[in-house]
Length: 75
Image 1: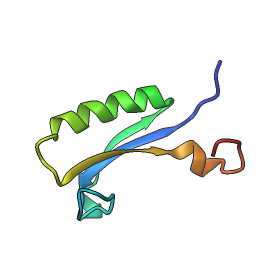
Image 2: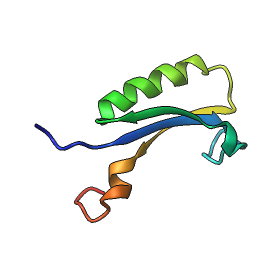
Image 3: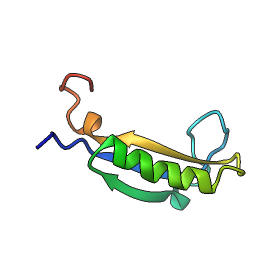
């Protein structure tokens, strides 16, 4: 079994489409936590494609495993 690498997918309206500062933290869409980057990317892609015409909506993948274990190589 491979090591579990947790990833969070979330999104919302951003102040600037070039950045990741969200307009309203109370309105963040938490898609979920996923056990691999591939699973997170699939969820991210589905949500991002639904909002592709709205430049202020942005979905991101957060590498939770890097935050939880920063001392590991690659973190």
